[in-house]
Length: 176
Image: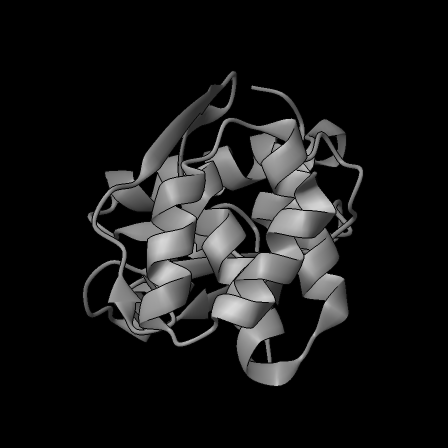
């Protein structure tokens, strides 16, 4: 196994996700790490946000993370040999008011990573733009969209359900 100090962000996420699943703990990677992975690191994120697919036992997570030498400090887990910190968030995974039902799986030498699909990663970033006016999140959504095949029709339908047609139109213009 590759040392943690040499793992890329995706490899580390896959290593952690596979380890947790072996312990019966189900999470999905979301947030900025998805943007980093899907944009081939044109965007930099120093954290890994894992969202619980189901309810989870914090003590079980802490025990599983200790097995791979991650220590909990506050709400985050860290390891002395990597700059990335890990956060576990209550689920279920959703973007806006829509629950995420389909998950993408990426294969790395360190394991299998369950991650938002590129389309859902775009929606996740757009949710921050739509609801909080976060323009950096708009730029992140564009990075994912131009670097991956996304279902723009689903993004538009979701945007309309969120009541954000004008902001979707801005996103679409920026894509073109």
